[in-house]
Amino acid sequence: MNNYKTDVLIIGAGGAGLVAALNAHKSGAKVTVLTKEYPTRAQTSMAQGGINAALGHAGEDSVEDHIQNTLKSAQGLANEEAVRLMCNEALEAVAWLDSIGVPFSRTKESKIAQRTLGGASAPRACYAQDYTGLKILHTLYDRAMVQGIEIKNERYLLNFITNKDKHEKSYACGATILNIRTGEVETYEAKSVIVATGGYSKIYHKHSTNAKGSTGDGIAAAIRAGARLSDMEFIQFHPTALKNSSILISESARGAGGYLLNSKGERFVDELLPRDQVARAINDQIQAGEEVFLDIRHLGEEFIMEQLPQERKLAKLYENVDPVSELIPIKPVAHYTMGGIEVDKNSHTKLKGLFAAGECANHKVHGANRLGGNSLLELIVFGKQAGENAAAWAKKFDNTIETGEQTISAQNFVKGVKYFTNQIDFYQKHQFMGNIFYNNAGISKDEMGLKAVLGAVRQIQKEIPFMGPKDKSNIYNTNLVDFIEFGNMVELCEIILVSMISRNESRGAHYRSDIPNPNDMAYKAHTITWKEDGVLCADFME
Ligand SMILES: Cc1cc2nc3c(=O)[nH]c(=O)nc-3n(C[C@H](O)[C@H](O)[C@H](O)COP(=O)(O)OP(=O)(O)OC[C@H]3O[C@@H](n4cnc5c(N)ncnc54)[C@H](O)[C@@H]3O)c2cc1C
Image (cartoon, rainbow, N blue to C red; front, top):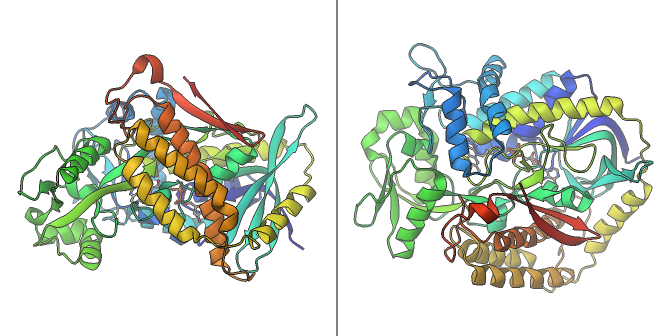
């Protein structure tokens, strides 16, 4: 029996999924959470720098300053109402995390400690050493366990199930899932669904700080099911990843006074400008033949061990340098995807009954460039909203749920891809795609380069039937999962490139060297993409 029923089905057990689960559960709904890995391994665990809230514990600050910093960094593409809501609720969000046991670092007066991240006018990021995301995620997971929320691991979302109501309007009512342990397709019927599957930076392959699973699965499934995506061209590059491994060295290192130096030992940029500007300045140095380093030696061993112990460990382990006495070689890599599933002010997507939260959603609080510390905040504020609203939607649900055909189609898909010929190695294609994206659709791009990458992606789309998993087995077939993830990434690549090519201007993280200035008259608007009968459509909307 592979048919399961719940009220609110949540795909993803990172910060957003778990906050949504806790709040849907609190609202009285039966909740089921599915994740393709284990909750404690979600990318949220990698967040280091902190979560923003204008508590003013380390210097004067105000909610209004937080709002203004966020709007400035977003460069005209944020929704002010959403930003105001997020920044206003930040204080309560951090107080709630504190109350459920997140071990925030403290000041001498026992207040939650705060530090400065790029683009912030005050020390605003609340942190737990440089393990902030890990501590938050583990506490949320612990909380979900205590509440008895059902969480099923190693369940991979294939597609959302949709039906049509009496007015021929589509609604989401479940999902088809690959049980990675058994290889069977399971069907989950639900009165509402929340997608919280994270971002898509792993398209850049090794040129990304992200977890292996950040392949945009939920976003690809959402557009296939009838939801809309927005701002997919806005991809943030983090200035300081380790040069050889792309592992992140947190912005808190610069916040604490770290310098950026070129091979001549010169500082060349204000280290605390927003990420898009710092990443471009570093890229310019690298293009001019310089190596770039992060220097935190002057902060001293005691400070580094107290505030940045993970950064020291990572630099030693992956770059073979000890930041206490040596420079850290760095480069900018893909880090955060501002675009995602278009949601309204209730976290509801265009597809009724489908809600979205976290990095996979576009609540329009980051616009063209996210501020460090605002993503963890977004997970808490909008995860809560999505959980409460999905529970309310489930309560009112009075439609039928018919899953038969869509289950069969998912079963056929899983069987079918195993017959693909595997003449072309898709792992190599992913690496290739990552390289061409990094070089031509990365920190700096132009129309010619973008069109060349689009041509390559369309060729890869044609070659997919000649790829496929080598492993034809059912049980724990991770080769099959990798292949399905690859398919989702290729689907999103086309959407990203079409959006990048359509935006004939530079704005925030979207920098076009052929058109280096913003054009407010034409492009102070969001790119919207959707599919009609499988065909990609795009437009700009205010
Ligand atoms: C190295 C690093 C440091 C960062 N530091 C900070 C910071 O200091 N402050 C800050 O605000 N932000 C930071 N960020 C950004 C922030 O951590 C992420 O944006 C955020 O954690 C995303 O949370 P999420 O819940 O949306 O997704 P994730 O944490 O990525 O969780 C996604 C979940 O969805 C599941 N999933 C995905 N696809 C499927 C599928 N097909 N089927 C089933 N399940 C699926 C995954 O298994 C996972 O459980 C950092 C990011 C990185 C990479």
